[in-house]
Structures are given as C-alpha cells and as structure tokens.
Image 1 (cartoon, one colour):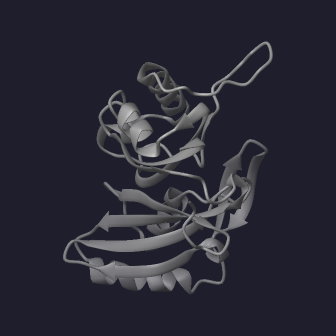
Image 2 (cartoon, helix red, strand yellow):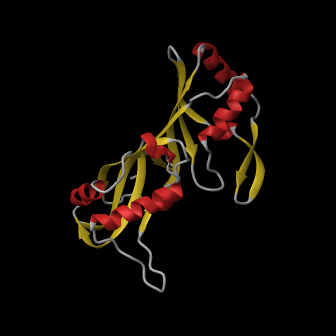
Length: 218
C-alpha cells in the first residue's frame, strides 16, 4: 500500500468534449465523493494533491492519460481504483493503479493514433510523403507568450503511415510541455493545406505517454 498512486485512465466518447479545467474539477469532486483519504496541502488555502501528467487537447480521445494522487494514509491500489471508478462519469475509465516509477519532469513525448477519412487514401499517403520531403513547414503557433513561427518538420516523428480502404492512418510521437508541445491538429491542418483537402471528421487518440528516451512513462 502506498501514499502516492498513479491512475492510468481513458477519456473517450462524450468525455472527449470535457475541457482540461472541467476535467480537473470533475475528478476532484469524484475523489471527494469516493471517500478516499486524499491529502490536502497546508496553509490558508489548502488544495487537494491530485495532478494530471499532461493536458489532453479538447475533442481528442485517449487511453493513456495519467492522474497522480497523494493520500493522507496508505491505500491499496486496486481498492482506490475501484472506489474512484464508481463515482466517475461516463467516458472516464480507470484502467489501472500503481506506484509511480518516473518523476513528472521526465515526461517528454506523447504518442497519438490519427485517422483521416478520404476517398483516395493511397493518393493522400503519397502526398504525405511529399509533405515530409519539403525543406520546412512553417506555421504560426499560439502560446501564452504570444504567436511565433515554428518549423513543424523536425518535430514530426511518424513511425507508422498507412492507407486503408477509406482512410490514412498514422502514429505520431510528439513532444509535450511548453514551449515545445505540438498539437496533432497543427500538423493535420498544415498537411490539409498542402494537399488541398478539407479536414472532415479526423479521429485522434492519444495512447501513450513517454520519457525523453521515448519509452513508456509510468
């Protein structure tokens, strides 16, 4: 039994439309309802010690999110998972609970599965290769510090790209954390402009968080 546990969870279905701020509030309320002995900070404004490894962009699904909770006393991981799952809304599923292995600062990359429906997927896949062969792909990236121009190409790690009967599917490993965080929609938008297509109903699922060595983050 450990005082600090990590929960790997899925955020799917209608839950993908819950913003990160609303997700934080939702989970905090669920932890309180669960009756688990969560730890609070001291001082005049105590707050619950429950943090997420990385914010998931709105509208995207995930089967690899991580929530870390500090408890006031040791809690059996499976008991904590079961109790918390009972009070979570539809679309949020706790997949497992375990003792942390890596420090939060070791999180560096995230892996996505991306599906883009298209009537000519083989042609689109060829255009993707041409897209990657460009000398640079400059886009404007917004952040809290303002708008800056960045080159996307060095930041695209694409271990898989394939054409199916009605779509092109990719796996991307992208950096996470300011200022290097890359939203997969930024890549899709730039590619759509290059290929002259519209972005209709892309499916994006984050499935794994990784260390700087691109091994799974636990």
